[in-house]
Length: 249
Image 1: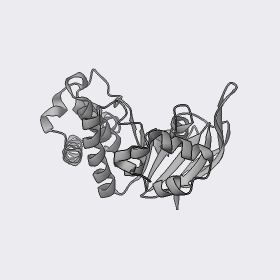
Image 2: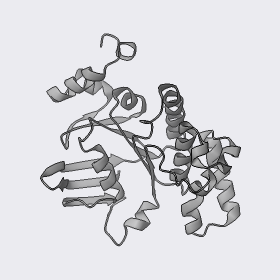
Image 3: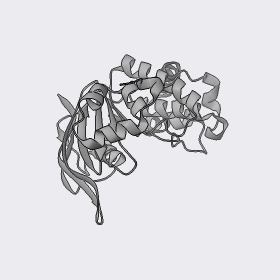
Image 4: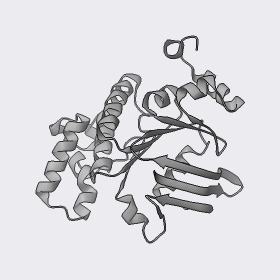
């Protein structure tokens, strides 16, 4: 069963085709990676899934219900969203960033405190960090706070737009390992955007490789390496292949 379904969805900005007409089904409790170069349509596709932008053609459905202006805000409560640099409000503490939507929904304080404690343990964020402001946190801690905020309402789906792209390699590797552990523990549907083949292989149950607004291949890393559907697939993979990771494959 698909939790997110795109039917003939396209998006243009003036004369630029950001996303060509596309059909796409995202299943339940699986991790997907949208992979491709800058400008290929990855972030556009993610924003369409979230209802941040409206398609020029076709429909986007969540759990069988088409996204419309009248229901999109309610549906977003079932979707967590994490962006690069975490997107935290600088004038709020980490705790206040995490609980912002829960407070808007009038959660009682004991429920808020219990959920924050649960999430802090899940993402391995020190409890004292919750009282700091974003500028007082490391890049990795900011991303952990952003993940807590996205998970606060216990959403069905987690959308992540290059969440690790701004981190240095060591912090990024540590957070990658923690994220994969979290994904496996929670068993939520995850759609993660990256341009990094290694990251895609590390996280994905299924990789969706985009090029110039089109989906050129869908499958596992072995499919991309051994059964490329298009010359671009081989070109893209070879451009990033690390001898330490892929060997002579």
